[in-house]
Length: 590
Image (cartoon, rainbow, N blue to C red; front, side):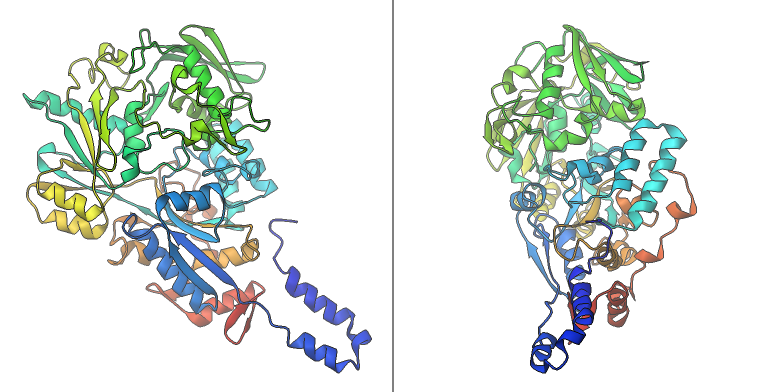
């Protein structure tokens, strides 16, 4: 079936049957009366989110969305469920109608490939959780991998136009990261990436005679029990894992920076892009074992298939699926040198694959046992005492209370200058430990900060908490834009959600400017998506896409049918009728 064919099979079939058989049934009034009285079913939709204690905004967005749906005659409900169950339903089992959650955002526009390409429909994680399939979209997502510069950007402009007509998901807002820290830290913005934490620790170590631990408050209790960097159902532990596990190349604000790699040499031969990576001499794991090219090659094999061939179809690691599919082949050249082949992909895209976290073969090689056709021990393992290669190593933890990281004194980066960051690690000692302390909710985190029991809030604040913090002279409020966004995902396996015209109307039911500015939502601490690139989840202004009329102006398809967040009932019902739907006693039916 054509993905973009209007979902009118039941309605048109009934109409067609009525027309073609009118002559045959003339005179059979009883049978005609029975057919006329056959009821249509009201459209029903369930919206899944995290509870307010875990995410303040998602339930608010879902609640207003449900009200708008009910005003449109749809039987809509909102079901908050805890984080592990939401991940299971949405990212693993695909058992949902609509979900609203905060997406971590895209590190590169190529991330749209695994999010939307039909090749990923049967996979887990953020690999096409919608069940979306469009040949034209597939072609454009593949073409951008083989283009660079303006040509690549122009392909994305065509992609945005194509997606405008299908609406597999809705982008609602790009929230600012709202944070708070002790005023003594003198921060201008909240640290959100591992390198920002490293820079903070390095600066503190030069200013203080003593080096007390950096105490970071977080809400996610699973952090203390599950430190598996390749698990699907990871909570808010990206920073912690980024400190523990180093990549070959680290993505930074100044671009890709060699990390475990001393150098990356890009070449092209017979139309195939290759990169030869030389590892830094003397690199070791936290347990003292040497880190070599075999670990890098093993990491790629494991992420591609966590069963290492035990399951015929393979069980890839969903968390890094988009990046591993860029790699065509990996060959060990010697102990500290490895060659990547990327086929016809360009280096602009292929370099994403070098940002994968490298895993120790001697720790993970025994974790490949299949538990079923979709899960291996590697994906299910809690990894409570992780062994990585980062500048920080695991020290201690107590379930539901805290995780402590300590500096890894034997890290090779202590003896070298990092490009763009000279002297960061060789002129200072990273002697402070980091304690991630778990609190029951964000309010308790803020209170602990105000009482001096924390140095920094690691979980994003809601605007209401920011106002509370702002009243204290001992604490600084911090804010910065982010690439994360609130996404409303539609399960195209649902009988009505298969219809792109129906989904386009749903995408109109969000008054984005109101949600961003109103004090009951983001109170101005967010950015509304208005251009074609931001409407598909790419951070506004970050990628410098061609600014054609199509990519800069909000199309009429996304104009809110109402004002100030209040839906115009007659207007929204007219939209559904224009999409081919009808009403029966005020109910939208199909």
